[in-house]
Length: 273
Image 1 (cartoon, rainbow, N blue to C red):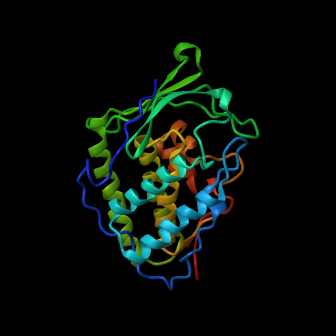
Image 2 (cartoon, rainbow, N blue to C red; image 1 turned 120 degrees about the vertical axis):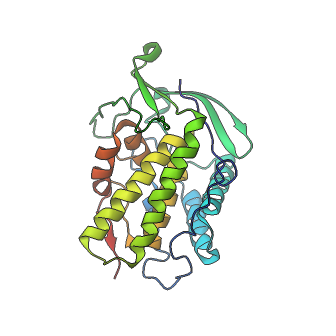
Image 3 (cartoon, rainbow, N blue to C red; image 1 turned 90 degrees about the vertical axis):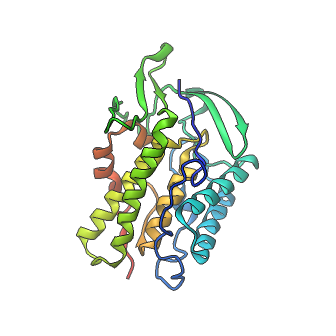
């Protein structure tokens, strides 16, 4: 079974991140470039709620003007996500259709906490099935999601990482994020862009392991990563048809996910001029 351990960033973990990359630059060409379509997955059965998307975009833009620290930005994204969920917003959900999802959960405080999640299979719109990979610990202190094939008659079940993995994973994310800060003054060339794509993909992958919400951590992780892209003056496009990045992260090893990340978009990210 898949146990969800919800994370109160900045309160439970007590990690101080630098402020999100240059936040008061409202004259940047990329400021305000995130559009609702960039937050949707083009998969049959996934919601496309424009009210939700516009609400999340307002969180991004308002956070820029306030120069919020990283953990406070995450908290605002999560609070808005919670409000949208309570108002029955149709956002990206970890499923292909309802028949393939077995879930039991309850609402706890800030979070929609799902106790058990079993996905029978993840098949894209064009019926290109993904291979299922058994995750290994990438160091002795961190244990990520593991897969269990043929669990109780299902094709695939995920066992969530134990809560003691949260802090070391967040420290690892902080290290990646602080490295992205140094990229804001780097040359705007392909080498820099490749490094940024890889780092953001890695953040996306690890957050997915830690925070897969019942209604899809794209509501949080995807908004966060696109905020970082926009802050670095990089334009992103919608996801390709059949791509749900969080599901890709759950069934794809880290090195493969980071390698393929820019190709998950309809057009690879690029620097704005």
